[in-house]
Length: 228
Image (cartoon, rainbow, N blue to C red; front, side, top):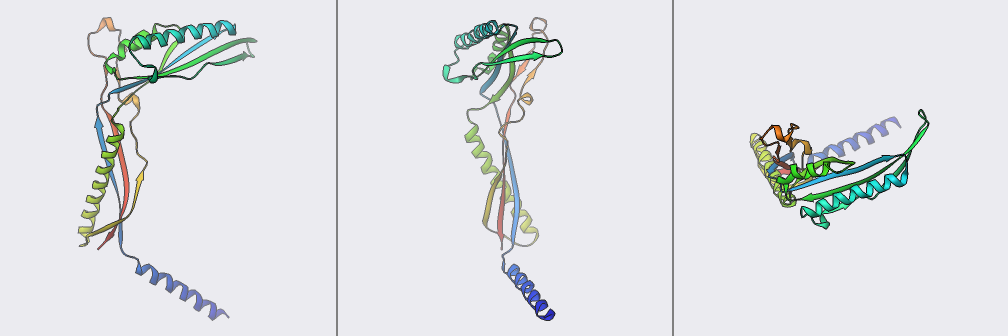
């Protein structure tokens, strides 16, 4: 009984070995590409936050500041389709230590504009409005999709070149690709890497304190080629 089992196992192993030998040789490589382009859109996130002991007063103050922000955006020719609001969020806060109760009312406005050179003016006008905070400024591009496609093509070419060079070392050549997958890529780096802002007061310096820099769009692919 033991010999029969051993023979069966040996036959199974031999089958797998033969099957593996029938598989054609392949090479797996990764190609990467990155394209830097100049941004032409700016997206800014603004929060209106009010704290008050009276909910009605907090809501009124928030509404007034929100209206001023929207009026400013209209004044600088930012279209309604490029503005979105989160809606009002109201919370009741209980301070058990001080045994007090107060309310917070929040509203968030996100808008985009092609007028990147107006960053300083827009930010200063927003901050003049009570209870307004600029949470984030991100630079993007209207050509992101087409640039992403070009980066993907460059990544595929990079993968092919790498595979050809590796195959040549083995005195072999490339066959057709049998598998292509796209690795997670990034459209943009951290927005703070795109913005240089010096917090010195404007009246004390005439130097440029805001630079748009460049944004990066990258692609990464994995390709498996047959070898000949």
